Length: 155
Image (tube, rainbow, N blue to C red; front, top):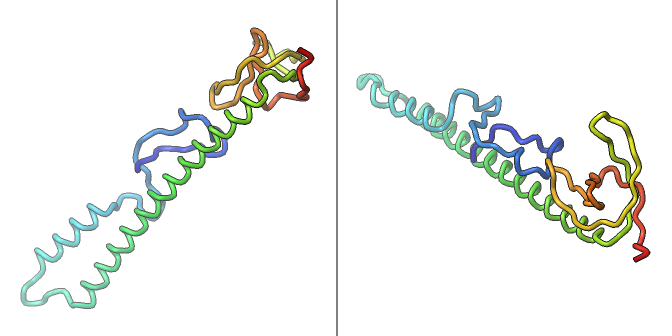
């Protein structure tokens, strides 16, 4: 799995934070398994027949290749795990937000000029917006992070 950047904690539950590209750790920069294998094959193909590579060196190179392969597989597994956790968190947030539908909430929103304003109303729906769970109250949207109080609706 190739990953360019997962801003795991900054935008954990936003799908748009996942992109594809080339993942390189400091241990693997510039040398992937294909390059390593090509170099090893070229070394064996071009060795001096009168002075071949010793068995010890051959075994050491094969062990290095095996280690590189295992590291690559481990990195792929960790990246898959991060993506899975982020998707599970996203679904968990949607589930939690859906339990707020029909409840009366009070929270703080900011207008386009940055002026703070308190709103109170009944949650009609929830959705993800820019990676954050947002509650729909009338015509306004309240990010769940700005909720101050939740009550049973008087309706």
